[in-house]
Image (cartoon, rainbow, N blue to C red; front, top):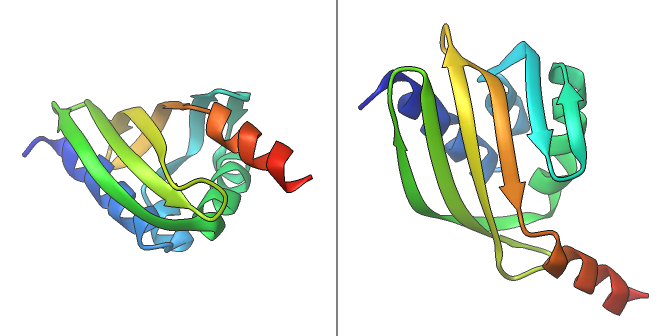
Length: 119
């Protein structure tokens, strides 16, 4: 198994287990993340982004994962409190055992619909 894929899967398993501290141990201090809501820079911003998701997570099912020594792609379907199926994918760059860049994609439509129904 490639270096980047090992890190990406360990990170995935950590947040899937709702262990934010362990998940953050795979994140570089200077991470850059491009997400649907915009660019995040730094571990503190990334923690603020990831924490609410981990708190509402019920489970996650791995759909696919592959990678090489520097880049990995993980695709999964998450079940959350407001949304029963929230597919997502993360393409990460890993250096020195930490994720330094993440291109994070997910479908915001189910979350938007759940917010509208809750009002």
